[in-house]
Structure formats: C-alpha cells, structure tokens
Image: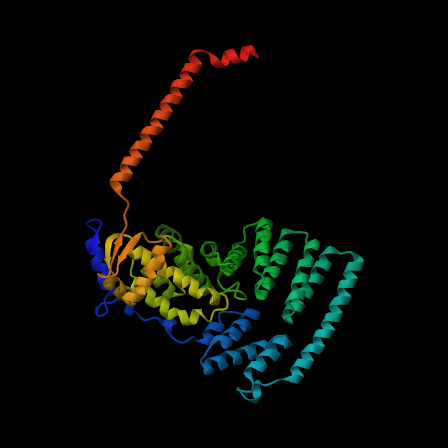
Length: 444
C-alpha cells in the first residue's frame, strides 16, 4: 500500500495486525456469548403479554433445531393458558402436533370454559356501555370502549380492539386520556403489523404531551423506531432508538426489551451513519451507552468498526446473525443491514490510501480475492468508491482528483466573483452619486 501521507505506515501495521490469521494477541478472539445457540427461556423472560407468545411462535417457525423449536412451543403453550386467547391456543396445539406428550395436547374443556366466560363478559360490557351512552356520561363511555378494547385484545381480536380504542377519542377530556388512547392504538397496531398507524398515533401522542413524562417519551421513541425500521428508513430508525432514554427500563416489555433498543439502534446506526455521527451520536451518547452495556457484543462491534478493526467487527456480526434472524422485527432487515455495514467497511478501508493490495484486504475481511473483487466492482459501479482495479497485479488504485487543477479552478472562480462584486459596487455608487433613484421618484 502507498499512503497519502506519513501516517499511512502505522495504519498499514494496524490493518496487517487485524487481518492476520496467526497473531497471538488477536482482538477478534474474544468470547462472543451471543454466538451460542439462543437461550429461549432467557430470551422469553425479557418480554410479557402477547409479544412474548408471538416471539416464541416466530422462533419455533424459523428454528431448524427440533429441540429448541419444541421448547419455544412449550413455553408459548404455557403462556397462552395464562390468558384467554383460545384461537392462538389452537394454533400452537396444531404446531406442537402431539410431539410434547399428552400434557401439551388440545384442552377442549379449557377452551370451552374460556369461550363461555368471554360471551358472558362481552354481554355484560355491552349492557354497561349502552347504559353509559343513554346517560351521556363521557368518562363512563370512554371507559366502556376502553374495556371493550382490552377484552378484544385479550381474545386476539386485534381489529376490533383497535376500533374500540380509537372510539374512545371522541370522549377524551384530558391530554392523559388522549395519550392512553394513542398508546393502546400503537400497541395493537404493532401487533397487527400496521406501522403507518403507529407513526400516526405516535405523532398524535407527542402533540398531546403537555407534561414531560420520560417513560412515555421513551416508549414513543421506540414505537417510532420500529415503524421506521419496518419502512426501511434505517437512519430515522437509528435516530429514534438513540433518542430513547434509560427511563424505558422494562416498562415497555409488552413491545420491546432494552436489549432490542441497543441491537436495532446499533445496527441501523452502523449501516447509515458516517464516522462523525457514529462517534458523537452512538459512542459518546451517555444515554444509549446504558442500553449498549446490556448487549456487549453490539457495543464491541461498534467500537471495532469505528477503530477500523474490520475483521473483529465482521466476526461479531457473523456470530450474531443466527440469533438476529430469529427476531420478529429484525428478521426481514438483517441481510440488508449487513450488506450496508460491510459496504461501509470496504469504503472506509480504501479511503485513506492511493493503492491497496487486494490480497491483504481480502485477508482483513476474511474473504477470497475473487469475492472481494466482485464486491469492489459493484461499489465502483455505484460510484461509492472512486477507484480502478488492476486485476492482473491484484491492486486497487484510487482515483484522486487533480488537486493542482482544482486549486487553479477555485482561484479563477474567486477572481470572477471578486470582479462581479466590484462592478456591482461601482454601479451602485454611481447611481447614488447622480441621484438616479430620487429623479425617478420626482417624475412620478
């Protein structure tokens, strides 16, 4: 490699040390706990409510390991029986298909009892709501619709739950009522996958906030982050997760865990932020550091990326990938985010140098020279790297702009601007001297 300046030498040594395979003091050999098989029980303990069940079912659907799959289904079965969602119960029993023995089979008596109680409760709620509407008591009507929303949500009828929560809006009399309505609508919308609704109700809730409630603000940031993540607006998603305050704690575990905030925010930031933003908004962000401490692997890979330890960073990503693909919100975005992070690493690696040895670069990125060439060709074609490849000698040459010519062009442009400004000043002084404006006014 030929460096642009005297600092290239140490940087070359740094990259050799990072890319080499036999260094005794390799940073990339640190233990990576998240690379192990997912601990389903510990993972499920981070969540509560419906999202806990849906995440367990998602893991069971995506997991190839039969033992882990059955463990997830067993936990989902047990969790469902604590609630009243018989439809979801039947689905899980069908997925288990008798593989867990008689204790985890179809419990018809339980389903019938729950459905019977549900009918009675629904009839009671309808009678109460009709009485409230007859008496025109706004607060009671609001509470009646809210109870209906809770009832439908508990029984898995998300569409009806959403309608009931939204109907309370006409009977809200305080900002607290509006925020409660918005948070309920956001929760159901996330479960239904209707993320445009999430964005809309986050905005409504933010407008209604008249007293700063740190927990509510943190929840709204998380909801907005999930909506942007689903819309593949990764930079906006990163900003929202980074703005989430540590007050969130476990207050929103029916939607998201603090560990998820670190993972989603960290990966989205790596994929979209430049080095300056990564340093100021992620690494030096004291609030977000609290979340990163919960997921040391994400913290280390961000630090490695910023420090140009790409081999170590990519190893962390590789070890995390299997578990990230089991995340219900991140699953569809892992490949895209990983590609963007890798492309950024390739761009940053080549940026300081006039020429790069592809054999050495392939070693640093743990890939073949042929594979690296294809990646670099794609980046050069997209105009993300200004360079050309010498395929025979396996060297990448940077196309740096002609600094001498660029300097002359700037000088000439400055001269033209100066000439234009002087002429304008002379014209103005002559107009004032001959009282041109005054004469024009007098004629009028």
